[in-house]
Amino acid sequence: MKQKKQVFDSVLDLIGDTPMIKLKKITSEFKGNYLAKVEAFNPGHSSKDRIALYIIEQAEKQGILKPGDTIIETTSGNTGFSIAMVSVIKGYDCILAVSSKSSADKIDMLKNMGAKVYVCPANVSADDPRSYYQVAKRLHDEIKGSVYINQYFNQLNIDAHYQSTGPEIWNQTGGEITHLVACSGTGGTISGTAKYLKEQNPNIKIIGVDAFGSVLKKYHETREFDDKEIYPYRIEGLGKNLIPTATDFDSIDKFIKVSDEESAHTARELAQTEGLFVGYTSGAAMQALKQLNELNEFKETDNIVVIFPDHGSRYMSKIYSDKWMSEQGFFDSKNEAAAQSIQY
Ligand code: PMP
Image 1 (tube, helix red, strand yellow):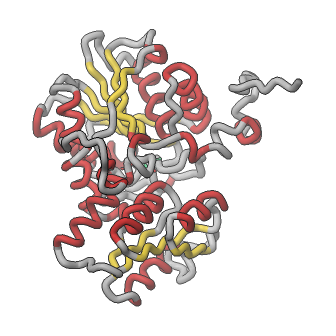
Image 2: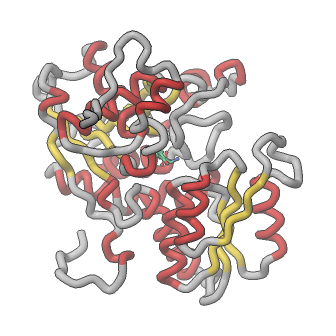
């Protein structure tokens, strides 16, 4: 663990060592004790700060990256923001190839963080030369000394969490952890953390959270890719329509799937019960805890750690917008707009 300091050399010193916070009200009817690892406390407000810093520093150590070189990734989400932030401090150019589906807010955020953003058409296949995958690959080939982070297929994504998130959770709980519940997107967080925790105690149970519409749970159970599992869903960063090599399926004991609607409501509930204004996948992870309780997964004496990956501010035009929630049909019968605004 890093030593506590009052003054930091740069924002990079604030990456990791995120707090663990007890969940009380929202779990009051549940069996077991619940601790949330709140990744919004990273300076880039998500767990992706860890992989951005780790992967870039590994490339530096191997002499692949030199000052002025370029870092490339295909993302408009948290990883893009984290890579841009690390690039600013370390003096690299950052190129992000994003889909034209990305919101203007997200693109503006990345540009303001100094990234060069290539907006690529959303409705073309991954092997079309205009797709963001192909644009990133082409730029990587063309730009000498560039590094392509490629988070879904990069073993260093797992290593980053093995080196940081895993040891932090072990130390913060004093080893008193029986279950880890974490979302799986690239799979880096859950795989790296699970590997470290299982090395300390192989009895710790690792439960992955997947989305309806994603292939991960089925693949875990059958080791076969079933494209019938795939359909569109709203939660960003959770689940996938391909099998990422950054997921170590053997380290995960089981997956549970959650819905867009319940995850959105549960994220809102976290703000109003625990004062935690967290992202959509944090709502998904909390929703998984609810379902696991209904399935009688936990005992009264269990100590369950759940990872909340990012901050709620990135979802103002989504789950925290009453308009968006209504448009999705998520308010249907409940009519439970969270903050009723009062007009004077
Ligand atoms: N939540 C959010 C908001 C994310 O952006 C991601 C990353 N895709 C995840 C959860 C999942 O983390 P991982 O990629 O490490 O599986």
